[in-house]
Amino acid sequence: MIGAPMTQPKPAAPFVFDPPSRVLLGPGPSDVPARVLSALARPTVGYLDASYTALLETLQQQLRDLFRADYAETLAVTGAGTAAMEAALYNVLEVGDTVVAGVHGYFGDRLRQVAERAGAQVHVVEAPWGEPTSPAAVKAKLASLGTAKVVCVPHGETSTGVCQPIPELAEAAHAHGALMVVDTVASLGGTEFDTAGWGVDVAYTGAQKCISAPPGLSPITFSPRAMEVVRQRKTPCASWYLDLLGNLTVWSTPHKYHHTGSINLVYAMHEALNIIAEEGLAARVDRTAHTARALWAGLEALGVPLSVEPAYRLPTLTAARVPDGVDEARVRAHLMSEYGVEIAGGLGPLAGKIWRIGLMGASCSRRNVMLLLTALEEALREQGQAVATGAGAAAASAVFGED
Ligand SMILES: *Cc1c(COP(=O)(O)O)cnc(C)c1O
Image 1 (cartoon, rainbow, N blue to C red):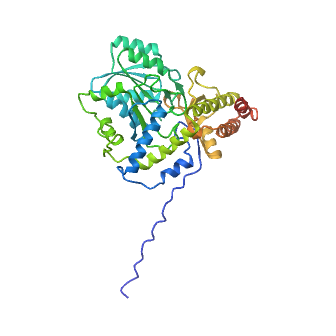
Image 2: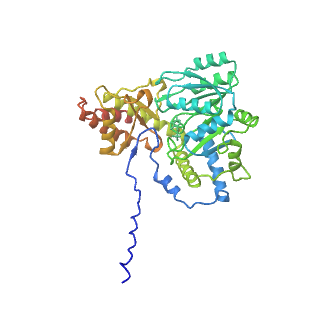
Image 3: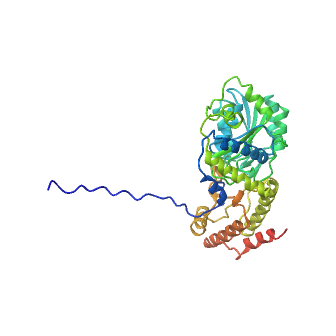
């Protein structure tokens, strides 16, 4: 005997991630339809495969329809919504340019930070969290500056549930020769947004909110006026990866390599946009508005006040005030553990004070609203709140029954 036989280490059991079943009613991601998920599993082809470049052209037209703009320079950048935010600002701004940023929440502030990192002199027009940016205040700021390169705001501010008056802001921007740059990550495909009709020069969104595609691909469009600014730059875009002129070589003929696109995510977004086309964009916006009204009626009936005035309330993301004496995190934990329902808490100054409930794309349904209201009622009663049985569901049901 030379020694004990060598024992092979036992291979570790392969870890298979089997995601739990969830109902995604937070600020994104939203539920992704099975059709979209199966599109992801189609075979990967090369980034210059003729079938793929033809698909890019189809997707580009679908995106123009979604933005409601026939702008030639429409594409999707490879990355999250924040990548499109950086693409928007890095491509139109050069060091020393003047920017007016409307800030009334977390994402307006992210726009401000990105503009500053692009080297711009950023002037902030602030509004309290929960209120929109005042077009009069933007006008006054622009008048005091004389001119600016860019005015930027989010359309739907996901941290507060506020929807901004974009046409008025765009008019103010144009009166002073500025481009209007708008973040529609939380709104496009869920609530009215008319890029060309409202005079928006750069608009961008993300895959995982009202489009209900998996995260990682972010549509963006540039008006002819914005393209003039891009083409007349004195310095190249500070980001190589997000450089619009470079990215456009992929999206226009003859299609060229710039960086490897997220090929399977393109399949998925194309399928998600097929679903939007089948429903019809206007019908989808109506469905979202109607479903949101039912949610709002249900929340109020449960004694959960809405944070934002009806005039500028965002249908795709509702901010609701946590009633006195209620532990907001415990309510969210109950929804998750008992029903697999995800909603979000507040950010920044609103942490602990509000819940944020998303009704985005595929997640926006009567079924989900009834489930949420029933689960929320249970969670509130568990914390000693006096809530009449079925009050929230009954109020929502009445709205659903209206037409
Ligand atoms: C979610 C969101 C973003 C950021 O998107 P990511 O995909 O997380 O980078 C930006 N703006 C708004 C308004 C959003 O709701």
